[in-house]
Length: 111
Length: 111
Image 1 (spheres, rainbow over the protein chains, first blue to last red):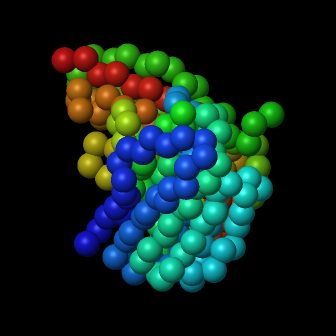
Image 2 (image 1 turned 135 degrees about the vertical axis):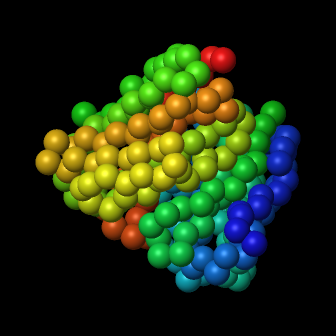
């Protein structure tokens, strides 16, 4: 298995909802990442997990809460989001932190 | 000055043309250089990865890094309509740190 999978593909949520994004990889990669990408912009790093521990938090608001239950799985819990949080949320993984492989993303719309 | 500069284009070429995509950067600490291809509404796909200065070739793609000039390039030979996408350069200081992306160049190859 040489891919990163993300679910759901699309998500529409209200500002009072709680939802979660899921990312999975079975390549034995020990680093996993969450990025946010707005339309026609490059991806922006949100969080990095290394060996299941949070190693980088790029000053992301607390309404985004990451979780790494095991070495293959990465979640992003969402609560009380704003319409400006609407974006493509990308998960990536890497073996030694160099080449990062991206999933297809979850397209999030906050109403 | 942004850390990574990339002309967003758009760049339009006929099928079979040689395409040159470029990025400049300001931080001499960058050591790892990558090119990603991103189709509309999809996640970025890693095309090429280079460490330090030099050239790397993979099929129709050639990546060049000139650290003395802080300049990287991606050449696409015999371009095809399927190459139409946004090309993102990315770089990092060391393994496990954030990838810093350029804005991306939108390429259109017409048949």
